[in-house]
Image (cartoon, rainbow, N blue to C red):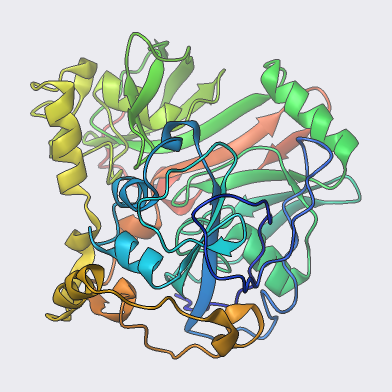
Length: 429
């Protein structure tokens, strides 16, 4: 496994809004993109240095106000949307001047979010470990880049990940940037991942996918002996938990179509092919759960929190409200904590109730980040020891095998776990 991180830069819009304070701002105005299919922004050398022996660095997280956030108080919204943080953290971060709205420090936890607000949050970034696996190039020319994505790394920056992403690794290891993402794969999923290098190819490939002219095939290893005949599932899929991005089958969901075919079974588990006509979030995982054959090591959709049948046939044995609570409890971030500084929570509570002066970012060098200490007293990751993840956390038995149409044929070899063992004691028929 690798454990690299990086230094950060801060950028945001500088629109004026009420209830922001401190005239010093480290931000540069951000130019709006001219088209929706804009490239993934290439990181600067200061933002992502090529020599990356770093461990923990300072950085910022940036977002714009989502529709469901409008009118909500900023600290309360932060607390309810980002479950990894302590309940008091968002209030403390505001009071210390760690939260910016439209380029200016927002020290008022009661500030009501407005449409199109740009929000930045300054904090440590503790880059999570990933598997030491290479990025294999399938196609690399002037129009597109196609890779065999390793499991364990997200496609682009999210949460604590920045360098330990496909985009980050392509930049730091190969100097490749300015790519346009055609589709996504989950962090623990491996396989075919396509980037366009120009606007024309970007449009061509996305239109082919949207019009179902591109065949998308995955392989996965599921729990149980999957039927020998082809299985079709068209259960609509909708959001279950916004903050976790989890989905479920529901009548008011979006149309989704998947076709499954067994490749082989050992009498206990099965490896199957999955061809999807639509591209809903977690579609294969949700449909397999519904059919009663969840992916063998799917830590979210193959879990007892979904009820005694683990979601088979959408039978949860409990109301949706209770289902949500049980899943959130089963996957709360603190379950990964091995040890925590006993004074950490007390410290946050005290700071929340105190009257304090916000930080002056000019004291911390360019962009207010360069001269911060390695230990941040309000940073959760500085105050805990995490459990060592299992291999199943890094790698799920789900692999994007091929994307094919009349013009393109992008295919990878089967991963090791999907290859039928050459022995005579597995169940076959």
